[in-house]
Length: 307
Image (cartoon, rainbow, N blue to C red; front, side, top):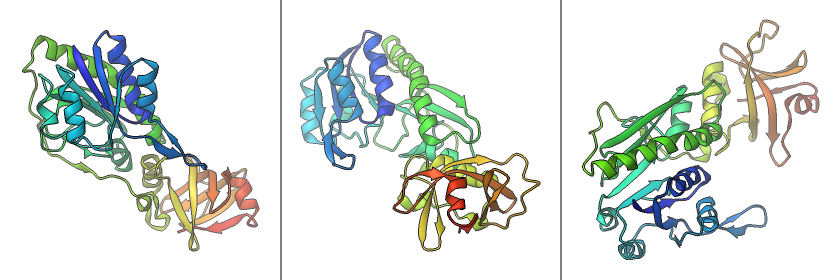
């Protein structure tokens, strides 16, 4: 199949490599423009741009899929467009340029969690069985016919970053299956069924965990969904305390902590919640490096109050 590929982050790289390894002809790769990274804000190509260059593929960089991208794709003669986490919408005329249109690998069980942050929102909602769907792109958001599906079970405490890394590898099988299906039957696809939900893009404020009104399960689910980005935090007075790593407390019988009360109990830094406690394994105070939770509390006479 003659394919044009669009993607940007590390989670899209396995799909590009899988299509290439399968022998499909990758005519070109669209990715977002170089972005400043690190403390020195050095402009750096996206992970997909770097992978495409390593594979010897032609790269087109654009922060939106507008007229310039459409004109570039029009000259390729692509049979199929494949998009994985590019970070922008595909609209006409680009949408209809490839002979068989575009397909998208989306990390949710559509129509559940349409939108920008499906894995994050699913984890925040306490879900541990996460789906993935390869579907045809249409003008409406994540609403096209489904080609292939799969799912994966994750243990409590798996972060969004970890889940996305695993799903991005696991999802290549569904993506290759969808391309094979279109090769055999260009009109393949089944309409989506069920109630849809929307996965809004995360903001920094989504990272705040309101300890005083949360249960242990809800704290751990919230933490998982916003880790590593935008990052989970609670308030220490008026300052944020980043909750870098949390763990469940399987036996909190020795801890009688009020919600928001953090203390060293035994050899652990525990934080009280509505129905027990969670362990503060690693934290990052404002303007300071990440540190062990116990070490942080020792520097505060062994206790603190979060909200």
